[in-house]
Image (tube, rainbow, N blue to C red; front, side):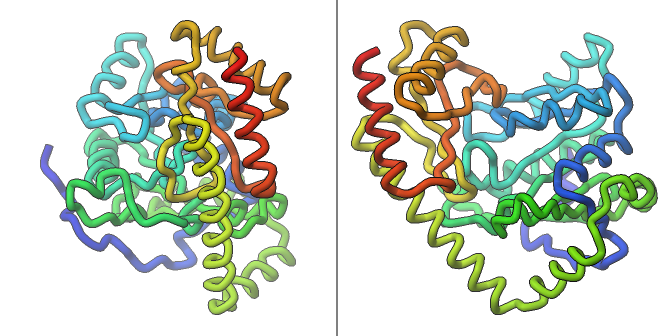
Length: 333
């Protein structure tokens, strides 16, 4: 495939007429996919992914989420793997209209490197698909390394382009700890999508007083920088406490650098590699250890045994206690 974009700095100026604001990223995604898909159309999503995407696509628009796994849990699918997913959909009579990327990743907490991210974006655009990039954790970065740093490539995870089929989604819920305020924004150069979004946004608009308050907040650049820095420090400390406890317990975990989730691998404690056995472990963790985890199956992971943990909503003491309970449970069962 001809590489239409060179490596480098892809930052562009953003004007107000390229933005659409709605009541949260969920509303943005719901309305966006209503604009670019028909009922029954497929949307490719690199797996594992945020479990609610299935509902976001299906509940009103009838679009179908199709998970596509890479070479391992922390790798984006290659163009060849994406081609194979498209061919499988076509064989079933399903049209593929879009690819949905999340960077940084939920549930993995990794930042994808420039090469793999650009390959996925360029693949989607070259195949006349809409490419949606969810960057809701863009400023919740507490580490320094991306997945393919070892290749020597310079990491530039948050890219944009003049293409009218590339859409970027952002919100205040994660980076600004403001999930209840429901502030989401779409950035696109597609004038047709903008007109349609402006029309349907009436039904999920952000109140004027809230827009004014958010504008005042974001214009205080010093406060924003200080808040994001403090939030990153807190995430780093929480993540450090969790990973230290997991290491002491001998539980493998993905080296996250962003977001608020840890992806742990409990497959070594499974009696057999089945989704039923994964569910057994989840049930034991919930009922015996009183720990709530998200099963890998819900994240459309390719193999049983992995779970998502959130480390940002409890104290460090609670994190170490939870891992201690998990260690005891695994030893017993």
